[in-house]
Length: 191
Image: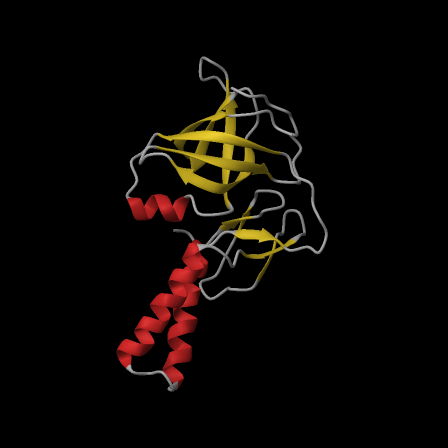
């Protein structure tokens, strides 16, 4: 996993630091975001932290603070960013079926496709020729059907020059680290 994260506003990469746990500022769009602090990864970190503290018998020691801080910093490396705003931001969305092209272990799948992860995509025609620019989406409410496929809600980033509507049945590729990792199909029109 990389320390760099995608901006949930514009999709550009924001350089990260290991102990950066709070707010991020995107130099590209100027908006602020923060670590997404919900989901199973966050809860797992708390359980692991408590287990370490109990196992090492540091419940009332200063080491317990250091252990939690270190575990939380490690967890923040894999957590995505969410928009930091008090206002509702409308975003285009749809449902999609994802078929993995690469093999991932169970743990890697769960981490990679956890709630609100951002990915670049590109829509293609029936001959696999690109018919869109690269867009960024947030993958939410992931439901694995098998080890090779899952359904999810997708939301498009709000700041984009390429706001094109696509329809049920349109296909796209999902990328991670500049590599195609999934072939996807819209289950309904983008609204």
